[in-house]
Figure 1: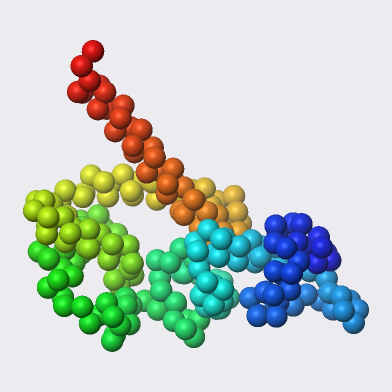
Figure 2 (figure 1 turned 90 degrees about the vertical axis):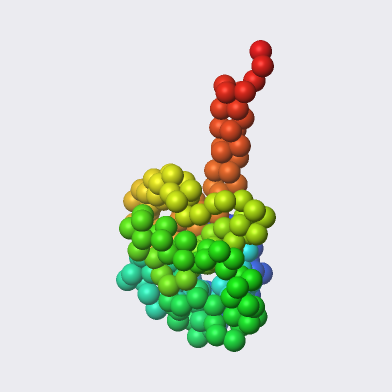
Length: 226
């Protein structure tokens, strides 16, 4: 297809496509003339993934380029590919996946551990994942969010530990299975990665809203004075 058709199919403007081509995010098409090239379905899928990484996940062009480099190097490993696209697995500047947490010497590492981990919240997350039997990467960003939340709750005097999160983790486990079930129809790895990203990032506000609606409903059943 010509670049105009590629733009229509992908939803990305022609000037933006040309920018991605110049910057190396999008591979060149097959040259058909001095200033013309033909593109295929692989370009469409890659552009849709780029659009999702930048427009939905909110990555910079530079960070998107790093993620795409890692994706290209790991096309045969869907589990790793999904982790890279969703941000569950950090990406090094070289484009290689990093299975570790924040880099040593970072601002976060310079912060006193006692202030970051009030009451052993990091250990709580390890206990929670062990209880659930979850296989995760080392110190993923989501685990950091949980540990920081638990530490904040304890600092505010709320008696809350990993055992309190188990029922929520069980619901999250079922939700994750539903998410991955919806990838079955997308056979191409790039399509699966794009769909996983959309299901994860775009659905999160709706899932939170569903929780609020359910809370209102059950509050009415339990506490409303009619």
